[in-house]
Length: 122
View (spheres, rainbow, N blue to C red):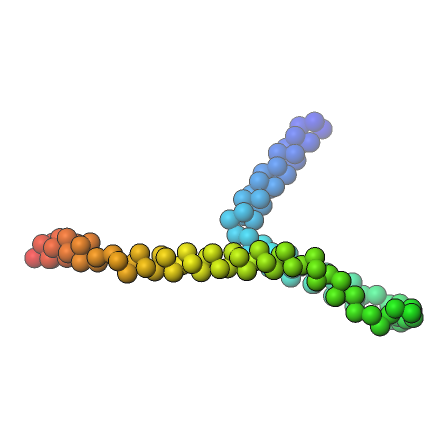
């Protein structure tokens, strides 16, 4: 029984390592597939529930019509500010990179390659 447990533990460890490697190498497909699986499970639970449970109870409160999303705005300002700063710094980095690329003398690099190509094709 101990040998079976060790084999199972080893296989589970290898599967975890492969999964972790795949997620690290392909984060976007992993996130999109997790989102798709979550939506599929949510829809399955929603449509599998009996009709009697689908009736909703509406609770009235004195502040029920208040838009609570306004309260989250002050907490999100630092996030927006840092995103804007990152965008501005990355835009400047791209501009600097384009300026450096414009200064490169392409003939300096292409001329030896053309000479070798002509010599090779003769």
